[in-house]
Every structure is written in structure tokens, then in C-alpha cells.
Image (tube, rainbow, N blue to C red; front, side, top):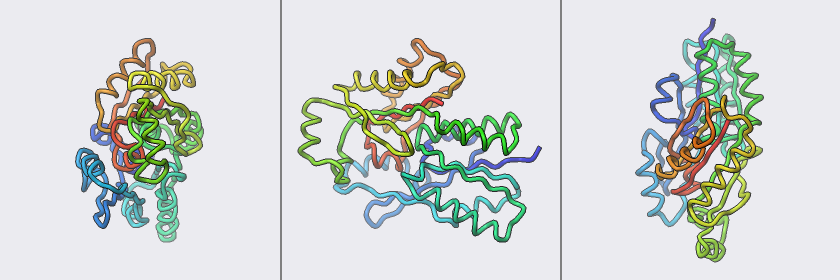
Amino acid sequence: MSKIKLITDGSCDLSKDIIEKYNIEVIGLNVLFGDESFIGGEEIDNQTFYKRMSESQQLPKTSCPSPEKFIESYNCEVDNILVLTISSKLSGTYSSAILAKKMFTNENYNKNIEIIDTLNGCAGQGALVVKAAQMIEEGKSFEEIIETIEKIKYKIVHFGTLETLENAIKGGRISALKASIVNAFNFKVIVQITDGLVKPVDKARGEVNSLKKVVESVLQLSGDTSEKILSIAHANCPHKADKVRELLEKEHQFKKIIISEVGPVMGTYTSKGAILVSAL
């Protein structure tokens, strides 16, 4: 059985424990506050990121890793390399990984490098990475893992709720007037990640109702959950993640439950207080 190296990018937002357990290599994305650039998860932690973002008048920017970063990871003793990236519709990371593969394999014909666009980010991407890691641990073949991930990435159920529209205002995606109306009625936006994009699909009044609506949306499309991976990611609000877990576990069982924190990449768009939930 040949060894398989598993690589992903920092937008997966998996915890350090899971990354170490499955020996996953994570390539960080860049976060920019004005002229200052940091590698998310390496040069700036989540707490610092959320604090700086709340204090900034302008929305921070993110940029994908350079092809050289991926080439460094490809240059290893393992011949079979699997890369799972954030949705190509949300970031240029997938394109960077593809370009790096072309550059690297020109001189390294013995390498099998497969790059998968997960069409997800954060909780959904993390769930796919964990699924791939489990299959590697089980001794599945390189080809079987690729085929499975390519198939199930379209079946992920992924919903979330935003606590605030602060970042939508800073990013110019919604006017301050419209946001003030939404906030006045204490509405929380419900979003769904589908077709590789984050789309607003509903709203709910208040925190409790918004969390319940996310849970209901996930369960409605998930079917039998006993063999599914449940991934819950929170943007600096662990109490909400605990509440969602409690609601979901009340009447349903899952094969594995992952709780993580939304990092700088997705956090730039969701702002603090967001909850993202996926079932795979």
C-alpha cells in the first residue's frame, strides 16, 4: 500500500487536534489589514483577527497562497498527493494549486498529484478533509478516495446564520440603511453554501430562532444522520456551537461531530457571531 499525503488550505478551519491526528498539511491563506499581511493561523490567531477586524473601518482582504507554497508541499518523499481546496468560486487557491502542479510535474513525473475543488469552505470543506483522512487511515486506495470525495462533495448539506451585517456594509454588499432595518427587527440572515457559493436563503428573528432554523434546514436535507460527519464552525461564539450541537443531538445521532472556529478567510465575510453547520 502506497502512502498518501493529504494537503488542504487554511480555510478548512479544522482544529489543531484533528490536523495532528490525521497528519494533514495545511497551507495558510493570506489576510491583509491595509498594508499589513499575515498568514492566517500562523502569523495571526483567530482572537487577534476578530479584534482587529471589529476595530477596522475597512474590511480586511484575503489572498490565496502562491504556487510556490504548494510546490514546497509537493516536494516530498510521498508519491501520491491529494489536495482539497476551498471552493474555486470563493478563492483563487484551487487555481494556485493547479498551476503549482503543472510547474512541479514538469520535472517530477513520478508524482501523482490530485487536486479537488471542494466547492465548499470552512465546515463543509473540513468535513470533506476529515472524510479523506479517515479513508487514508482505513487503507483505501488513492483512486477510491478521489472518486469518493468527488462524488460526495455535491451531497454536503451546509447552512449557517450571520449575527451581524457589519462586514456586508464594510464590503459594500448591502447599504447601511438596509442593514439598520434588518437589525432594528433583530433579524439574522440564514445562508446556504451551494454550487460553491454562499447565498442568503432566509432570515429569522433573534438568535434562538436563527439557530433552530439552521438546525431544521440541515436535518431536512440530511436524511439518515447515523453515518454522517457533522461539522459545526463558530465565529468567536462557542456558546452558539454548543447550543447547535445540543439541538442536533437531542433526537439524532452522528458518526462524528467536529466543532471548530471560523478563521480569517470565511470570517472576513461572515463577521463575528456566525455559525456554519454542515452534514456529510
